Amino acid sequence: MKVKICLFSLLVFSAMFLTAEPLQPGLSPGPGVKYATDAYPGFDSEDEIVKPSKKTPGWFRWFSGPKMDTAAEQLVWAEELDAQDKFWRAARAYDALVKEWPTAPEAPEAQLKLAELKEREGDYIDACEEYRYLLDFFSAKCNYAKVVESDFAMCEKMREEGKTIMFFRFANTVDVRRAYEALVLRAPGAAFVPGAMLTIAELREDEGKLERAVEVYENLRNLHPGTVEARTAMHREAKVRMRLIDEHSYNRGRIRDTINFLKLAVRSDCTISERSDYVAWLEEARKALDTATYIGSKFYDSRTRTRRSAINAYKLYLEDYPEGEHAAEARARLEELEAESAVAAAAEAATTEENAFEPPWLHDYMAEREAREAAAASQALEDNRPKWYYLWLAK
Image 1 (spheres, one colour):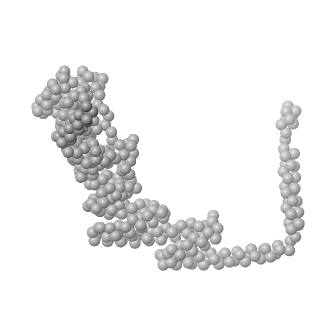
Image 2 (cartoon, rainbow, N blue to C red; image 1 turned 90 degrees about the vertical axis):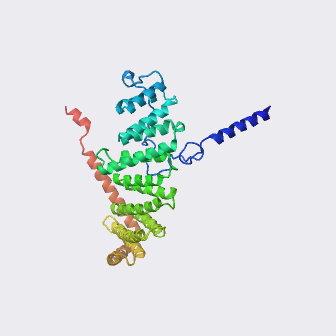
Image 3 (cartoon, rainbow, N blue to C red; image 1 turned 180 degrees about the vertical axis):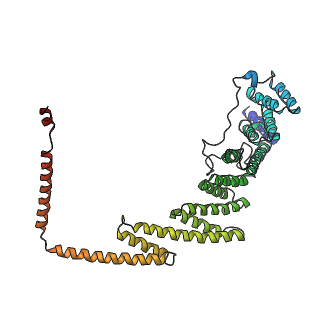
């Protein structure tokens, strides 16, 4: 009996597997999909990621609620309004169906039609949000790959419209960038993801978040090596790193990291023009490190620092940059400091020689005597200070 049950189960499972639609790695939910949580540095944090809230019936159901008794009837009515170009009423009818009957078979269809209606009206922001809602709450009941492509098209139109009108419609580039990030997180294996990540990094630059832009470019190169987008990302990343050097010229660690990156970029699969840029930027970064190291040496050459620290700093600089732009100036200052150090050492030696004949007992006696005199002076000062009981008796 157990054998028959196992065989029957195996046949049922095989039939389901053969009749099911083929899975699309990276797009459709199920085995093979790549989930992204904290695997995308440079994106917003988990708390900032765009997440649509589940739609629920509102307080004023007499106004915004469904007008029909069943989900099927509501869908037919909404489609009629849509066909009559009564878009505002149709959108409200589709939305009311999703809120009232979220588990009905008609709900994902109504949500899709709502998103498509918003797209036809040119309201790309709302359309993007409605497509995202479909992905989050009806992922197993919709054509996931097609919806993802539609959502990506909305992101592209939002971006293009923002460029055309200089983001007048959007408060800033953050809304557009977050729309791209939300889509990448929902379909990390889609073909458009490398291009979308390039856009995200570019929008990070527009926000002035250069370090976050570098993180996105670097992650793109790691996740999609060998692609055209990865090569573009390397060139853009190099340019951003040079901007960071200009803004933080004192940060020698950052400059060294950029130099190592540019050495790697020069040897990468790049165009002649890109390699020329890498070579020029590498030379510029090396000069920046030369200057930053020299400035660091001068930091020790101040009144708050010892002469020995300054001498060691200049020597280290000349060891690393014997032919550097500031080498001559460093050598001249080093000679001055060493001369001053020699004079000070000679004076200290003479003082030590003069005090060599002073007996130790005399030195201890004088120190003890000075301590007793200081204590006596302190006690006399305390004795002459008016006491609180004298003041009380004087009343």
